[in-house]
Image 1 (cartoon, rainbow, N blue to C red):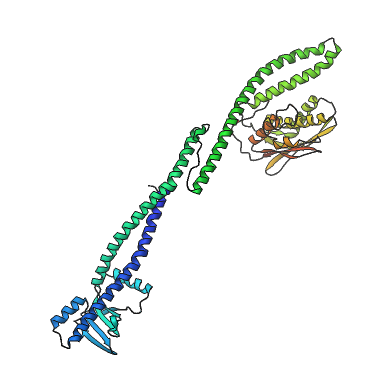
Image 2: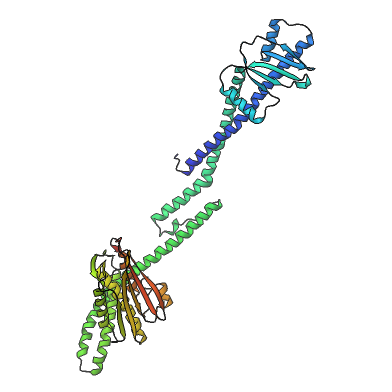
Length: 473
């Protein structure tokens, strides 16, 4: 039985409390026994003295010694009618070492005198003073040896110790058995359910059924049951989502091949002799391109891992210019969206250039498409700066802002898109890439005046290893 277990500590506490109980029982009992022993010596000495006084004759030395021996004392002094009289006496070789007046001893003093007598193994001579029984005088005083008293106290203490120890051990065993049945057995049952559930969390038979009698343990079992049901439900949902994701990835792969072929044929429609066909061809090509992009983005998100950032130092202004140039060419309405930069020409940061390009391109593309969707002119601003601890990049626009539902699930895949038909993967991928740099991507504001995202990249990067999850083109 180890002390770092509940049963071990309970047993140790039981032993400690038993020892304390023994002390609280033994000390008062020994002090009481000492008083009774001394009072019995006084009473026996008084009887011997009164027998002598009743004869009115002198006793022989042998008879006097016999009376003193039967009384267990050395001499007896009796005070009657204010006269102190040595009734019985024998030679005392040692000096009196202590005097005990039983008429004045309190509880604490009695316990202290008992301990002194018990611990002192010398056979000393002491004087004991008390009141005679039945008012047979004013005072009785005896002289006696301490060895018989100490021997009787030791014998009584051992018998009391054995008896009380037996009862204490029995009580401790019963308490331990009760603790095992009432506390430890239910706890082991909970642990067993947790262990079996951990091995098969999808098996509902391993979900615990609360039946503990103790209210606290029943509350614990109820909480465990609720947690197990929640985890099992979440695991089943995640399994279904994984299966759905695998199916979507397969469908997207085949659909991408089909759309790629359709895109090739759609390109040829631009050379058709029919003017209506030529006018419709660009729209058809753009629609097919968006569908291909959707398939490729879904496939990329389903990859097993995203490689860790490959860090290098580069000029952020040049990177922002590349992003703006690509988005300007991709715009459906030329001149409708104005790009503005607020970056110091010499600002150099340390990050993965390709991954940061993908993040900025994603944020800029979302902002451009939001503005184009309104049919009104707008502006997109890319700003950046640095502090002693980090680099920050701001991407803001004057678009219509994000819907409340999109803000609530902004960085969750397939949930945070604000465009009809969008997957919501772009921001999820962007946030994951920035987390790979040890930083964070956050939405600062989004209202009717536009939206603003902020990228924080720490200078002292704790780069994460390859992560399971999103990847992007």
